[in-house]
Image (tube, rainbow, N blue to C red; front, side, top):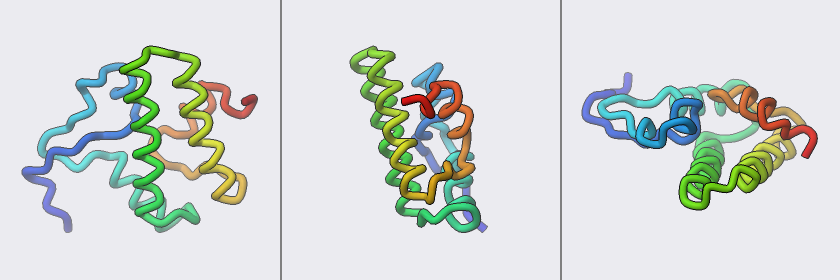
Length: 112
């Protein structure tokens, strides 16, 4: 079992962090997103754990760019581009990781 004490982690992309960037640091806990990424990479996805972590970093980069630039259109294009790459690389399906499906649907990425 993992020791979850004394672990500060940056949480990439969740509804809470998109609304409040300060919520991105979760002190002393392993975030749900990373735990979910580990589970999904083993069960529901063709992606390995390092690949899922790389995808999470790309999503975080989209969030960070939005915080810096403030472009809603750019944010949508960036996120949808990442999700399209994930879907293409996973045989046409978006893995069930964190809130990715809801974000994908809410941004209307299928129409991009």
